[in-house]
Image (cartoon, rainbow, N blue to C red; front, side):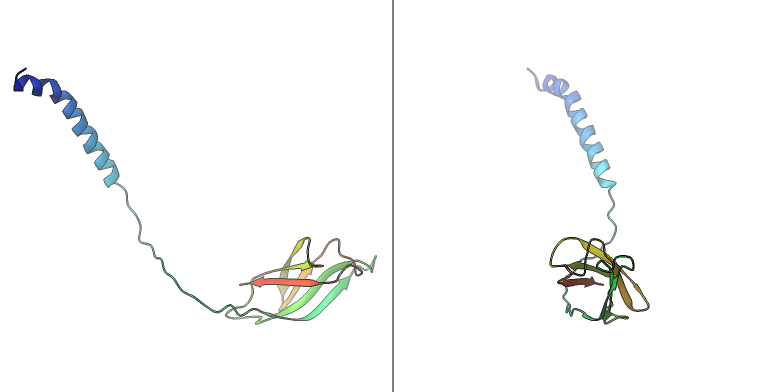
Length: 125
């Protein structure tokens, strides 16, 4: 088999491979990645002080606790909490809290004065 015959035989296959390689390179070259940042750091986690705790009893059935209210320090500014939940009796359901005028209120369900043995407050900014 002559050299020119080998080129003639493999030339179409070589052309297809080159075309596919060029198309794949052009597709990959179209990717753009925006600028981004990354880093590492540390900061102190100081915690909060819970004070002025007040349990609100149900007016119809005073043995049920409807809600609990309290204040957290720091209450405003840097480090002030924005997400607060409570748990009663060392387990069970978590109850979300909301804040008004610096006092956090957490509406409770299924808590009686008799079984209210522990208040757990979790707060984060």
